[in-house]
Image 1 (tube, rainbow, N blue to C red):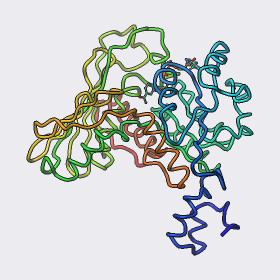
Image 2: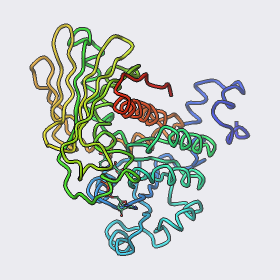
Image 3: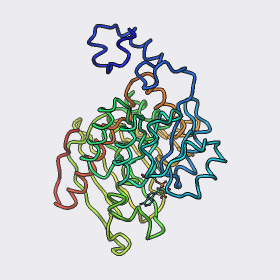
Image 4: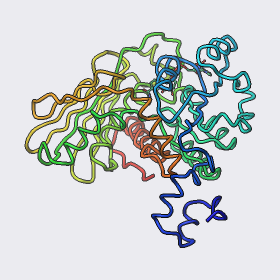
Length: 372
Ligand code: NAD
């Protein structure tokens, strides 16, 4: 068994080893990229990009995780280095900038690189992290195009490292309970979904409004949550999409979309009606309509205070730290060498749907969604 230690799982299985044996070996960390490591040890996470999300959500979440610890930082702002090192006890040898980032390859403190940069930088840093021999957790949207997503998946596969996308909602008890209720026909047969997420964006000079950095506007940033929720609930991929865009401030939204509504057809016959906007607050919902009732989340995508109601009754569920749950799940997947349910392919599927939405707007017609 020892000699099979470095074989990819596929080859290992075809070498005639039983599934039970694989489970026990995976448990011991043989496929995890951290061979022989004490399974009780927390995996080290390097945060790349110390902006708002890293500062206010991810670093605090890392203090609550069971399986991860903040062990390194990567920043382009020298002022942040000492502040973060002091606050989180990071070794001076585990502080990087965007230029010397590749040296992380020899940093034994780092198992996972978590990319929290503007969208256009996800592709480059995922590939560099994979080449440095690290597992990658990359924020949503995975990249600015499906082509980039495919290259990121290929780079992680070539390095035999795991890739997951920061779809935190898939780890919340509210979204999971909604999915279970719909699957278990608590509302009868699922007939239709309505989903939307938006907010009023401030500073007109921020990267989110620049196409080269953001890839798109409201759709890429927050509409993706509504899209995810529909795919998560149906368990299917949309086959075709029809979309329209509204722009009320041509100067502010010169480069990216302001508001989009779109309709997705699923192979089971379900239609989903979705919307996103950078123009107003309060749109934050998913509603599943069934033959016998409805299930609703509103707010559905906030960091806290999610609300779930099924057939008019509020469901009481604990509020969780979404990022801690997402990080702990990824660490477990790495240890057990099984792909994350929010793998790179999941990110690619969203980008394929997003590309169909933008094409539908451009061509003013319904667009078939490409397969991943
Ligand atoms: P932010 O603007 O607050 O932080 C971006 C960081 O990238 C900053 O530290 C900035 O210095 C750095 N950076 C490096 N090069 C840059 C450049 N050329 N232009 C601008 N900044 C540059 O953004 P954020 O809100 O932290 O978002 C980062 C990523 O996280 C995005 O991909 C976003 O979609 C994602 N995000 C996810 C969630 C979620 O709930 N999962 C929430 C917010 C943001």
